[in-house]
Image (tube, rainbow, N blue to C red):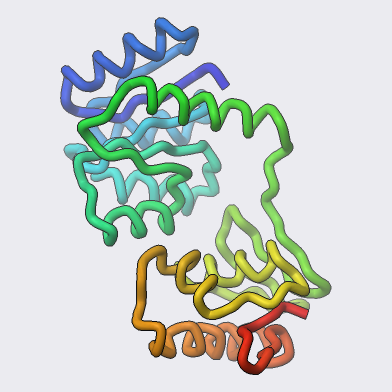
Length: 219
């Protein structure tokens, strides 16, 4: 993983990141707006993207969404001044692999880039999760239940992915809230139950088992 695309319209920041990465052995290209960034990302010529959200043309969220819709699995580290929980959750649910806020230390960015580098070298990319006749395509973000293809909302996708990565394990409502929503909800909220019911309607009632007083399990 040596070719990095820097999608950043602030020249000072782009130059700072580019010089630092090049000094550490990476090949870099800067895209100063979202349209150019998306074109580069779709080309397949890069191993990782550092993406600003506030880009001219297509903003970072749009670039990310269109990449994932085009089934581009290029790892993305978002580097942005936006620090709200809502933006962070939206970015990660939209397909970002990591999220950093400005101002930032280059050493931290480099560490995160190297982490992605080690992860890519260590294991082949997993693109499909399966359990019995249930399958989830991590690229298209669609599920298959037997012969049926099922479209999922962003939250449904993350919830189903969580169950498929922990088959047979009972997941408590608190675990699910923390993983899927990423911040505190009222413990008395029934939001988890609502989304589990939605998945059952789409995938089949037998797919998710209720363990009374404990949570839910994918048998």
